[in-house]
Image (tube, rainbow, N blue to C red):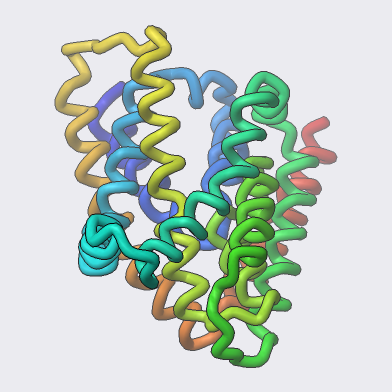
Length: 265
């Protein structure tokens, strides 16, 4: 893999990890357009690096929140930080169960099935549209909300369903305040990303190609910087209720994917 490919993949990963357009769906679309069905497995190491970069960008954006959470936890009291951490753990359960018990079945869905991707992008579009039209409520995220949002995150494993879009939309539709919904959505994915990275690293399937070290570094920087921009931008978009533009985008791309498949079937 050359530096250019790595930088493009890094930018795509950084942007689509946070913007509600589905990174997995766009990857499947890109494979179909480029005629490349091996892209997800081309470099497991690069995948790990790019995911680490986006997780790191989230940590940088929410560093003050994370520091406060750890301070509260290490005070060993039943405080707001402890309750928030418990909600994060609850939100992780559905996706962790799906990943543990149905990993092979889920991987079968990532085979260039643009019909599935198209319909799931349309579902994402609907969720974003409903969220954009919802009234502002100042309700905090409850324990029950945390689990339901976690279910949305598990469903978002499907290619074409945006993880950030699904979790933020679910949270807002449950009546949670929009900025808190975005904050919860981005913080809840950090443990899962690091868990997935740990699983990949310890699987023994990663091979280091020293000839591609520069490409890996460029991909990391591209994903990290684009992740910082996308995460900050997404928080602002949610606060200003501007998700309708992404709803339109996902609908157009979803319909386009279905038409593309029919024309090239």
